[in-house]
Image (cartoon, rainbow, N blue to C red; front, side):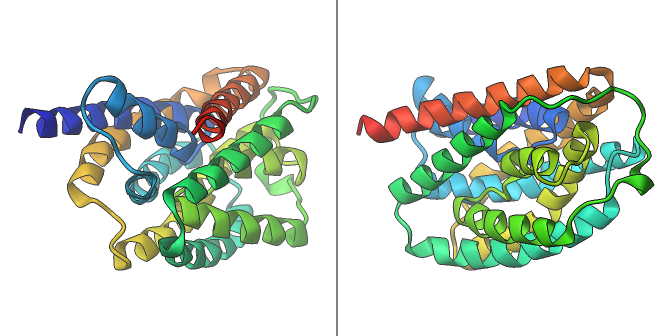
Length: 263
């Protein structure tokens, strides 16, 4: 019984920490939550979660925390609405298909897919890119709709499989492929993650892949923390944001690949 309550407390704490960092860096939360859910509970003796359980928890938490952080970024005029609509709708459709398909996938397959996506995103973030910290007129930002659709389709499907709308890879792809300014990419990513997570969450729920009590514990900590993290985004230099994002993604990728290769 104590171990059960201990796990719920640990999950609440993970929700707080993961969502704060996610709101700050414009991540839906999966790139932080998945490694923490994998490694923190067993490290403190609170229990072990399978990758399928984690995928189910993560997609629901991303839905809640992304919506919470999105309100703050939108208020700061850092959300490109056309970009969110185009990429969000396509990603949502793809995520639902990926979430349903994932029921046939093994835990090791889901972990390998997530690790590959994280490694790819971390490598992209290492590419130098000049950018100022000046205020940006969102209405003047243009992007390739074809490129946006292709990115959303691929990332949405894979993200739906692993319980992650792919925010941690959407952000670098928008920055380096679609040429969206970093702050706007961070704010818009939360919008895309929210829209994509709706269908992904439905797919996981209808196929019975969401442990409800465990998920509720993480959500309770994540929602207020995501708003708090989003409030700090405008106070941090662009280069610092990008480096922090790259470091978080790289660490998650390295840790998961280490586990995969040493099994």
